Image (cartoon, rainbow, N blue to C red; front, side):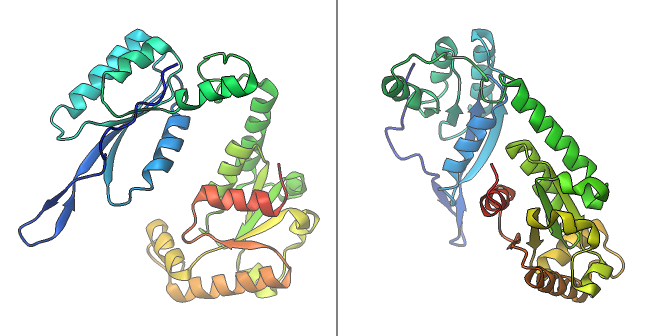
Length: 293
C-alpha cells in the first residue's frame, strides 16, 4: 500500500498584506476522502489541522469512494473545486483500495494516506497481512457491539431531561446540572462513542433551594456526574433559545450556577466546567473519573 505522500515544501497558509497594514489569512482547501463514512479521516485530519491556528481551512467531505469509478469522480470534484486556488489542496485519505488510492494521488502533491502510513509497519510488527477491507471500524462487523450502541442511544433519548426517573438507576452515567449546561449532547456522545447508557437530570429551583439531590437520584448516587458552566456563557446560550423573560437573565444564571456547584460540593459529586471544553473532552473526563469502560 502506498505510504503517505509528504509535502516537499511548507504547506502553511500564505498571508496577503492589506493597504491598512493588517494581515489577511489565505484560505486553504482541504478534502477528507474515505471508502466509508469518512469519520476517521475527518477526525484525525481535523486534529492535525488544529496545530495550524493561523490558517483558515475550507473543508469538503467525500465519503464512500469504494471503487475506481468513484475515485475518478472524486478526482474530478477536487480538480473542479480547486482549479482557481493559488495553492494545491490538502487531502486526507483513508482509502484501502490501491487502485483508488493511485487515482486520488494525482489530485494533489499533498495527499496524506492515513492508513497506508501505519498499515505497513503494523503488518511487520504483527507478522500478518492486513485485510485491506473498507469500513471495518464503522461497519457492523461486531453485531453485539453495534446492538449495545443502539441500546445505549435509545436509553439516552428516553431519559433526557429527567424522563423515566423510575429506571434511571439502570444508567451507566447520570449527568446533572442546570438547564443548558451541556447535558444532552454529552449524553448522546457517551452513548454513540462509548455505548454507555446515559441519563440526565436538570436541576430545577426546588432542587437548588433544598441544596441536595432529589430522592429519585439517590439509587444512582455513584453514577452521578455534574456539569457546570460560566454564568455569562449560560446566559448567552439561553438567550438564543428563549430571549424573553427571566430564564436567560445574567442574575438568574449566576444564582443557579452558584447553587448547583454548592450542591455538588455538599453531595461530594465530581463535576466539570463545560464552558471551554469540547464534548469529546467532557465525555473522556467522565469515563476516566467514573472508571467506566
